[in-house]
Length: 228
Image (cartoon, rainbow, N blue to C red; front, top):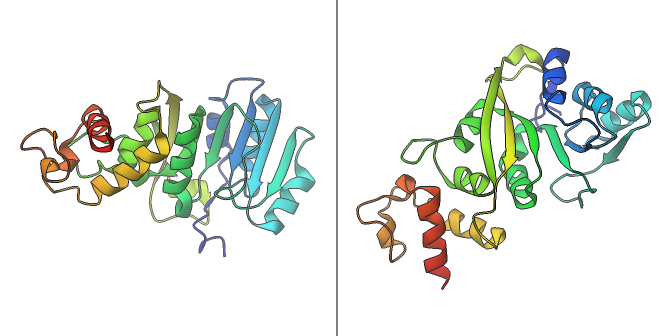
């Protein structure tokens, strides 16, 4: 069932230690997809409090039984639950919710260290004009500086995925727009036709540029023009 849900649980403690080491000491941490708790237990050594969200009730019960007192395990869907107050986000993000979870995280601009499928890490760090550049790139980088810190091999997980993963640090930057939800919808519309000439979709777009060639600043400018 866990494979069907896209959850490859981290089992390499050294990777968990590395990720936890990027969390400021004393932080209140929100973790999504806690699984068996390999990352959770390392986070608990540095954080004052860890809220660990896990969808699977059996895994949540297992983690609750072995977690220290500063860990609160929450059973539920991280895309639907109201998130508890936290000042840092850390997660081995289940593959199947990578994009919607990153968008929800970007809306909140919480500092974060996350494990992602390497393909997703390449998408959110892509440059304009590249094959991986798209709606997710622009939406995440509207509110974050993105650093891909290291790749992680399949053997670090159980069950091992068929692809490599990557540890990514997300550092909040001044927001590029004042209405992120509207901007997110705009980018979804715009990049649904990523190879089309941008000027055919929105007046004022740079002449000769296709959607996937637009920089973040150009997308933000178009967003302002098209909603005015």
